[in-house]
Amino acid sequence: MAKDPKQTAKDIVEIVKADNVVSYTNCLTRLRLNLKPTAEIDLEKLKATPNVMGVLRPSPTELQIVLGPGFVANVTQAFGKLVNVDKTAYNENGGTDEFVSAAQAAQAVKGEMKGKQNRVQTFFTKFSKIFSPMIIGFIGAGILSGIAGIMQSAYGGTMDTSHAPAAAVSWFKALNLILEIWKNAFIIIVGWRTCEVWGGSGVLGAMTAAIYSPVFVSSVIPMLVVGDANHVNYLGINITNPLTNWLTVGFRPALDASGKLVFGYPSGNILGALLTATAALWMERGVRKFMPGVLDTIGTPTLVLFGLLLLNIFLLIPISGYLYQAVAWFFAHLYTNPFGAFVLAAIFLMAVAFGIHQGFVPIYGILIEQTGVNGLFPILGMAGMAQVGTGIALWIMAAKGSLLRRQIQGALIPAIFGIGEPMIYGVTLPRIRPFVTSSIGAGFGGLFIGAVYMWGHVTFGLNAMFGPSGILATFMMTTDTGNVPLAVGIYLIGCVIAVLAGWLVTMFGYSRIVKAGGNDMKELYQKNGKYKLYQKILWTLAFLTIIGIFIYWTVAYYKLPKAKRQKIAHVKVE
Image 1 (cartoon, one colour):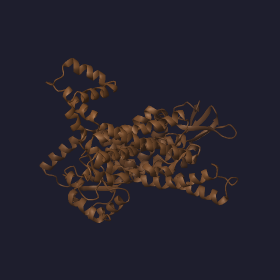
Image 2: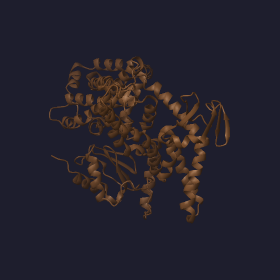
Image 3: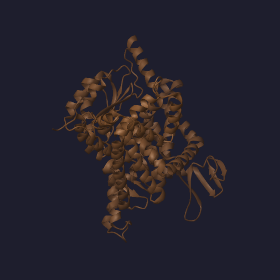
Image 4: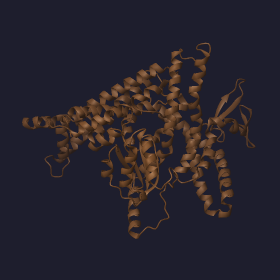
């Protein structure tokens, strides 16, 4: 039966209530609502709504409804016709001038206090909003560039008229054009969205973020008048040793064909854009506090832009340059290390579950610029493939005709193609244990890719900052040397390992030994239980070795009477 976006939107509005909606937007898979602090939503009823794959409420004023790719855009359009709010035209802080009773105010304060219990989560939720609208740009441009990469491989890795027909070379450059445009526009849009999400004027953030975009290098660099390798005049300041001087260290140094020192655009990249946009937000708020209303239109933008210019020149360009180098160094050593890659892949499911996974996008941007590929993306992509293995394991262990089997059958195919929300919110996360086993399984897929980086000396990844997950990401894989078949092969092997690991770890997680050991572990730490204090201390020390946990589980299982062991063996997963 075909999905009806209008009916789904109507069902959502009936539960959420149009009066509670302050703003709305959508990302690739989710309808994201900004609600009044006093809004009371029946989350269980919303989860049971047809076509709703999952519901997440990171804070009292934030609601995310998982609907799936494509369908979410149609529902959002229908939703907009039912609520009296313009899409994305909102105050992110949820402010309102409406009358609020004392009881409502008390409830709002209570909700705000609850939200403050996890400020980090709230921050990352907002941070993710910066990048949500940009995902479709990454995917479209990345797939077109991926097709260009396949063409390049077909002609031996070199696309010029001596190796390929002129028409093929022309199409190769045309298919890559959109991605090149997007790489430059992305930094400017980040500046705009950062200010917009936190309630500032997006245009001020965009204008100063453009300083860090490669496309404006010809406008930025004339400020630096180079005499020789040891002397630079920067805005009237004579600088010696420009490669180490604070004012110029944030620019990219290079030597031209004649051996003369030249500078490129600031190296801060997306980090610089985020910093300058944040500064724009604070400056705008500060200036508006004292600026007379009659002068606001002229005075505020002029003062803010001039202040941002000085701040970038003397502080943000150098700081973002150092930050860029530090982050690049840290992640270059983390994700190319098998054990670091294991950890990154294992924690990514948690980031997805809380809706903060787009916080990795700035790291993607740095890696793309450093290596030419997004090598972190395939590692994190192992999380989704491990979910597939976990789903298969749960399906095997579930009773025939059970609700769990039906849920898995509906979520498995989307998970294979990179849409993991139905599996996460509908199957693994509510049961907790399979969510944990899936995370561990993902770690093994990440470990394999990290091993390829470290010991195989192959640098591969996505050809863009962002793209589709699952099997669909295959079309965007390449190496730093343009070897598409090698990159695709490594990625697919990693996917197989993640699926198998997710399946095996989940099967073990529901095994007789783990069931018996898990139940016995609960008794270990009871105040008046059967274990004495010295036994608790010894076992706790053993657990720290990890191996001690498996030993404990095995001992606990074989201490059970035979009849009880047989009973555990026949328990089905629900």
